[in-house]
Length: 125
Image (cartoon, rainbow, N blue to C red; front, side, top):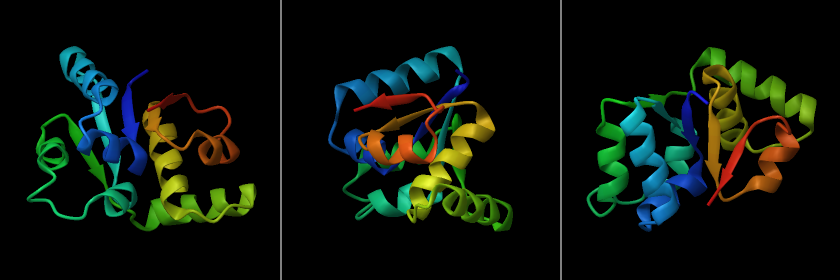
């Protein structure tokens, strides 16, 4: 594993002080793994940055990559949604990012992600 990608469920769990997510993030930092946050997942989780201090800190950490939904990723997301017959742009963007970086996905939504990418490693929180 080359780090972790967090979907909205993983980000919300962090925001709620979930010990499993805190441990995963601490371990990633300890071993120098990258932490990936697709911007689409952030959009689903962020509501009040001033009150979501854990999430706000994570975004600013040097080991965190915030990945925009640019033209290349938008095309990859659209193709993935078409192939899988699904419609959730954020879930597909999470999968595209995790595949690109060879990372496991931290999620609370295993069912939908498995439908899109059964081969991707999931860490369920």
